[in-house]
Length: 176
Image (cartoon, rainbow, N blue to C red; front, side):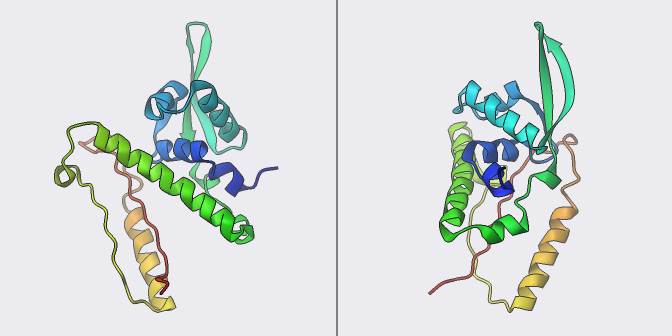
C-alpha cells in the first residue's frame, strides 16, 4: 500500500493535483491539454491511481462517441501528505519530494513564459525571498495569520473577472 507521500509526491501525480487546485473540474482531455508534455497513457494511468486512492472524485460523466468521459475534482482533504508519512520520510525522501514540487513549479513558470504575451506586473507574477527573524511562537502566529488570509480567499470560484492564480510558499530556517 502506498503512503500518501508515495502517492502524491510523484511528479506527474503532483502536477495533476496542482492542475485541479482552486476547485477546478476537469476531464482527462482537459488535463492532457494542461499537461501536454505527459503522454496520454501515462496521464490516464496516474489519474486512475489518484481516483482509486480517493484523491480525485468523479463529478460528472458524459457519453462521448460511445465512451464515457469523466470529469474529475480534487478531494483536498485526501490530497495532503499525512503527518505520520512526513515524519517517516528520510532526508533523501524529502529531497526527492521537494525536487518534484520545484519541478512542478518550474513547469508552471515555463508554461507562463512560453505563452508569449507576458507582463509580470500586469499578470501579478512575482518571486522573491525575504528573511524574517521569528521566535517559535512568532512563527506559529505568522503561520496562523497566513492560514487566515488564504482561508478568506480559497472559497472564491471562477467568474466575476477572476483569474486562477497559484500561490506557492516555502518556509525554511536559514542555515549558516
